[in-house]
Image (cartoon, rainbow, N blue to C red; front, side, top):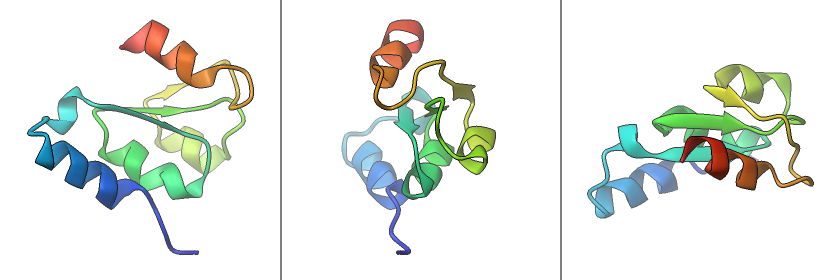
Length: 77
């Protein structure tokens, strides 16, 4: 509870000198929310909760069990 991936995502981009505008992050649950918001392109899988889908720039057709990340990479990377 209370843990999210946002700080780690921001720290990694900073350490690698990557402008977050040039990043993409995908997720399917509440611990992904801050990471999705921090990314240049925030991606939610089809079966993510509504709050996650609403925060994302892109909502995929596939869910987390049906190659959603592959879909995001093929279409948007």
